[in-house]
Amino acid sequence: DGGITQSPKYLFRKEGQNVTLSCEQNLNHDAMYWYRQDPGQGLRLIYYSQIVNDFQKGDIAEGYSVSREKKESFPLTVTSAQKNPTAFYLCASSPIFGQPGQGAHEQFFGPGTRLTVL
Amino acid sequence: SQQGEEDPQALSIQEGENATMNCSYKTSINNLQWYRQNSGRGLVHLILIRSNEREKHSGRLRVTLDTSKKSSSLLITASRAADTASYFCATVPRSNTGKLIFGQGTTLQVKP
Image 1 (cartoon, each protein chain N blue to C red):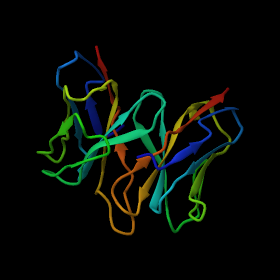
Image 2 (spheres, each protein chain N blue to C red; image 1 turned 60 degrees about the vertical axis):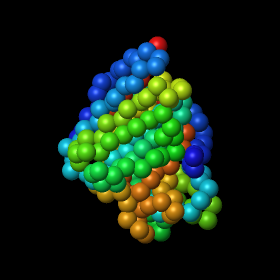
Image 3 (cartoon, rainbow over the protein chains, first blue to last red; image 1 turned 90 degrees about the horizontal axis):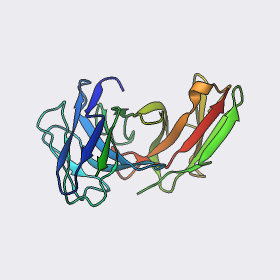
């Protein structure tokens, strides 16, 4: 988990509320990612950012929003439009997004935030 | 979009035995990566194998890649109770060099 912090570790939200998950890295990495993990499942990409002030939708972006105003920070907001937000959320970073012919580099993961909607 | 499919979904072995997990994928890749996740924690990168490589080793880990069969395997030799975790393969499709697509994982239990 070193180098990437996520807070809080556990988060409870009432239906209809927006909530923001924090992700900070001190690895000087350009690329950052948000994933969602449901029980017994693999990771699904929500949003990613190749560089500061840039971000793109992943496979399941509906009901989520992000910003990338600083290189080290990539907060994720889970909005009330997300119909089934209860899940484990993982943030990751990598030195660069990827290089033609080589592909993606390894990603470094934070410890995760477990979000429960009450 | 789940590209990697892992087999078996769950594996239970005794300490000292070898554990083999398999990953199959659908499209051409740049590289394939294996990650480990302890229960309720983040993922930890184990090994990366490029599409032009057939085998890589790292300590007790051995990864093979067969691009003609679109499959990879992870072998953990002389397993220990501390190896108990979920293991995921992640592929990097040629069509998008920066994104990882994760399989659903294999849950490994090593009994002491």
